Length: 118
Image (cartoon, rainbow, N blue to C red; front, top):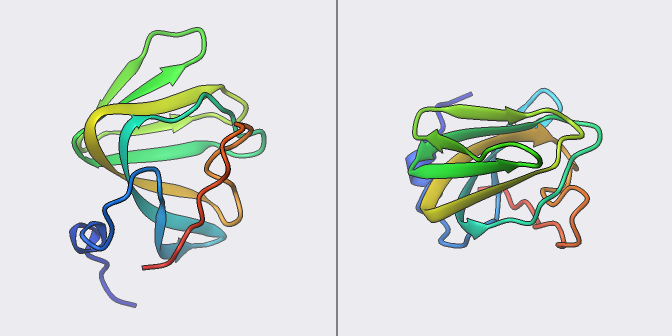
């Protein structure tokens, strides 16, 4: 048991849409990721989707609703089964929590990103 410096972990990679596991929480992966651009619309049938913006600003598009702006220090939870798409005009740094083995792409045609541990 020791503190995990998220800022330090985020310096270890430069890619976007590439989550990296920084810790385990019960049966969940705790990850950091950098976004820029947009991810495809998708849904997760069996789990909610948790986003905590650490730095920057994310936009969450929810099917049938107005886009939601999520700023640093704010979190956004997408309930299971809801079609959504995260996006960012400029790079944003985000903490994610999701069940181990859950593909980040949900039901999208995009291939899931591997989740290396850093």
